[in-house]
Image (tube, rainbow, N blue to C red; front, side, top):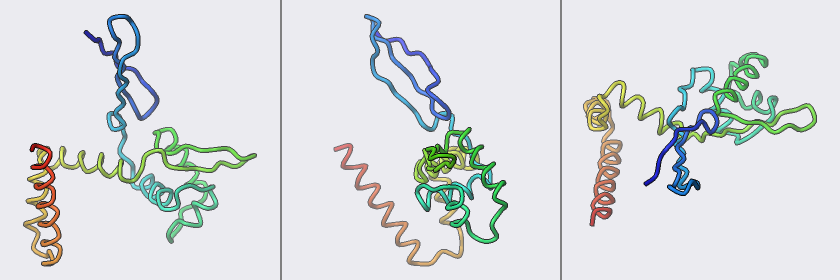
Length: 162
């Protein structure tokens, strides 16, 4: 029989460590999304730039920022907040920091979408898709592409169960 203990393995990630009866470590399971915080609009704008360029120094992040650019100090302060939240890390080169994302755009998008579905659509992806399907200004090509994605997901799910 294994006992599980919750431990903090660094913000924003938390996990579980299972201990076997002989006291040795068993499986270590980490959930990145357990304590992931939602980004503010300003934080998300900075993350979009970092995700786009991959990594960069503050001046490179500023150069890649769309117009109108915020103040340099504003961007640096936002980056420091993102580091504290566990979204960004840096490497130091002399006095300069090169920043890169810890959380990928795909990971954040998946978490954020799940949060929206939970809060606004009763935790039902069907309700979410229904809300979009009822939207009147869908193009026929978009509806066909959506249907194709759903058909593919159904096919994949049937293959998993077979």
